[in-house]
Length: 159
Image (cartoon, rainbow, N blue to C red):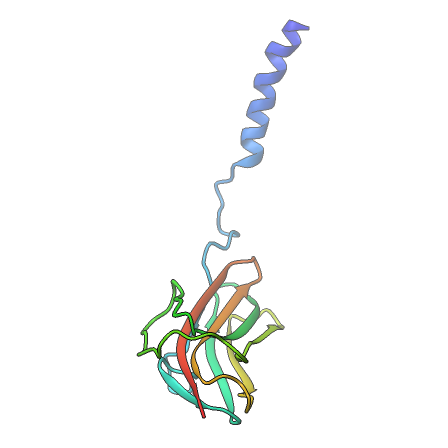
């Protein structure tokens, strides 16, 4: 039995090493998708003011080196002055306040067809009765291999 173990375990180790290694990484997607609102039609831009009761086209360009899978748009209050690590410009904020009836919007959508470039274009109406104040608009995109990117923009909702 000892002879078997002395020969079997080194052989098993070598087999596992070759089974797990590969010299061809060409099929592995190591790149995250990208998101941009920094183009002429991108919306909202940092510090944009949105009016309650109005409808807006929220637009962002997303790309990936292999294939896009899904995106989400999330609008939430920033009454506590929190930040996001991927956030660009920060705007002048109103004093901290307690939310009474904040806008909370989140939708997820699939991106069909294995495309590498896609423009998010989502029509969103700001409800008449939400609390005015500081908000974030957060975009998220996922590619077909599971990589995800996010970006957030400071916005204000006003009367």
